[in-house]
Length: 235
Image (cartoon, rainbow, N blue to C red; front, top):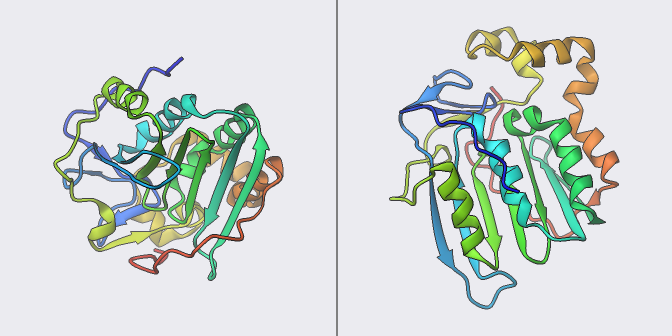
């Protein structure tokens, strides 16, 4: 069953708290970007289609869960932490979909709003990744399923929207959103529930990715190639 999408805010695209335009506010509503998708066919590859999708902050994790309906079993969960150099990439295989999605759901706010984390899930049918710029990259064998979800969410096909990875911007790790006075002063109000979670266990909250790695029994992703160090710096 596909989850019902949150309603779209008219003319507002919310950035994740862990990303901001140069000189802008963390988690701001911006008019420079919009929800959209692009799709292209792939030849001589395990999958037949590649989707690039952008979604407003409040709809990102629900969209991830909706797309994950098409993941088969066994499946793999993966997570990349981009702040250390070299980056740390982890993967686990042979899991049930429920195991992976439960671990991600426990930390959905951190995954969406930490500007240095990528995560995803994959099986033989589909691979869904949410990059550190918080766009979706989806590889799949059936485009009809993905298009049905995008229609349900009201996300239109291009034209290609300007997106944050091609303009000057800042990535912010999750801890600075709670601990750094300068970052906090330039941030939209954080949800009270997340502030309470952080205050109750600051170290555990900041190290949320460790909990995911342990729950999913992840190991290092040996074939991972580090991403270019472009526009990636803490606030």
